[in-house]
Image (tube, rainbow, N blue to C red; front, side, top):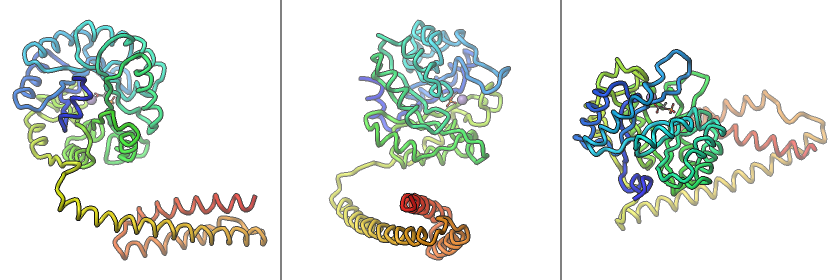
Length: 353
Ligand code: PEP
Ligand code: MN
């Protein structure tokens, strides 16, 4: 069975292990714990680490490959490493690594992805592709296409969030809508969530892991280290193996479907109500847009600008407080109004010619 089929079958598929392989003892100790507690379907360990700034720990390199082989032999665990160039692929294949993953800082570079693809031509190995650091779905999908073009078809995706300049609680903002859109467009490709790199800190891991399950994602990639505070990379986001076990034990894995007629009837009724309301919403939006057109024509006759900031402010204030009073968040109303407003401006702009 291919790895991607295995992932789809064993929900949630667990990719666990340290951020970086640091010593033989650390690799073996961690892997043996994970294996004996049934919380590892594929062991991860970074051997070559892409670092934001030079002079940080860049991984121990090829020296770690025999440690991973020993773990394979001792436990039967499958292992995966990150590759960022042809040389990494060559060394990993020589060492009998079971699967490769492409990191976020590599997926951004079509040259690097192409180089990896070329080095995999004619090879039969599963590849997991992390999203690029920037929120660009096409660039992520492009990496899959490069792999498929050289005959690599056992492919899975890893969502690890997106970097942003403005600080927020996450190390990499999840932008769930992008993961959801990936899943919608590529239903046959398993999608694994990487809470470690999304969160950047231990405290958020359980919440994000649960959210991944509630969004029906296929698996989790989670970093674990026997002494997280002393880890040579990503010390704030790694969990002790026993704490990882607790986190996983606490996860509620919900089903995407059940065949219970009572449940389905009730859900069907509620969905019908939603369908009717959505139809109403669309009719209302269309009526609103008709009036927007009238206003556009009238403004044109009178040579008046499309945007009047005072009116726009008034709308925002009135509608967000109206929303508030019926339990809708200001942010939600603001976003919807912004979208409607943009479309209105576009319509009036074309009327004004
Ligand atoms: C990693 O998995 O350790 C890693 C470097 O992740 P990312 O490519 O998501 O930054
Ligand atoms: Mn890491």
